[in-house]
Image (cartoon, rainbow, N blue to C red; front, side, top):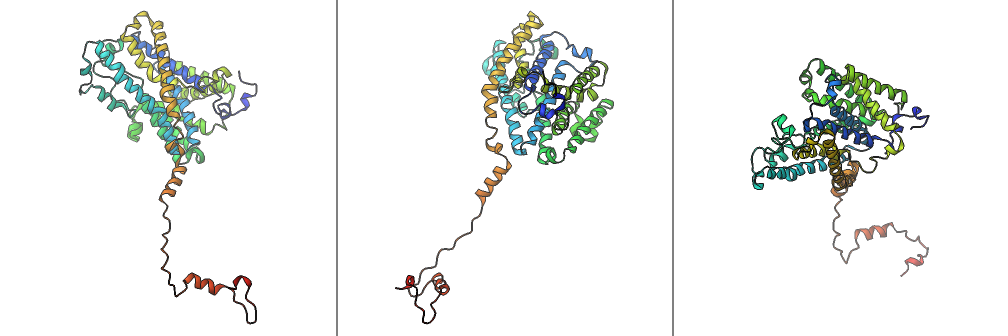
Length: 427
């Protein structure tokens, strides 16, 4: 447990570097998403969270909010230590490579396998139909999910397919578009130097989102009349914990790491979930609670995720794995065997994703655009610099001294009358 004087530190000191438990918490949150999806994907009914929170949240949505809270803190810290070019390059490397690979795995591994097992021909899977794998890739590669399924894969052969009447390969990926939008907000604040020189603007942006959250709850659709960006209820819901995390990041040296505040924030989170007010008051309390946990959990847990971060892989592969296992009937053994099997297979996929894709992509973070604007500005100046043109020397006239020689002769000291010429000038 933390030392006795931990409450005297700031939250920035408590979460400094990699000496924190945020990696462990993200892994736990990813597992909570897996648990939450077990209910609908296995046909076990609705998640129990909605019942106890009066429909305010489910276990999965709470986990996603926790993800966004941690992401907001870490991404803002990243934006404070890099220029906007470096920031966007590193965020791209962290999100896109693994995302594109999981799309390809769904389209070219799982999809054709299930298609053939359903009695179709392999070639027919790759037709140019509106539900083809090509349409799946073209509709989703930008992070904005435009197609959840391919052909009728999983539609008639899984519990979730029967519930929705549609093919759904990976229903977890839709949140990444909103996360990327939050990254772009930080990118604008980074480019305008707000994160370092005008921190109160971060508080203003967070307050605007909080007010938008309230307005949307009271009068749904109203915020869309103010700005189309906040017409989406989901964007408001996800950007709120993200920006609270970012706000704590920019003021991390001034916000205390206080155990009383940490426990109180946890209590407020639970009370708002049970009695109402979570969307307004529970979110900021929950953000502080999660970050406080990241700073005070014991040392063994702080080592989890420090070198190898499997949480992203668990999140992006979990749904696809659970759908595949449901196709093969594992859910028929019951909730816990289905969850256990999905956890094992998903962990293996996450391990492969990290070591084969994510880790290798992040090795490029200081390459190319990762070197920063100053480096490339200096490079451009060097390459494009216009050097002064030198005129070729005039042809020498043997009968006349050159201008330079004449000037040199004129400027040479001449011996006065009666004075002997220096020896160095004698013939």
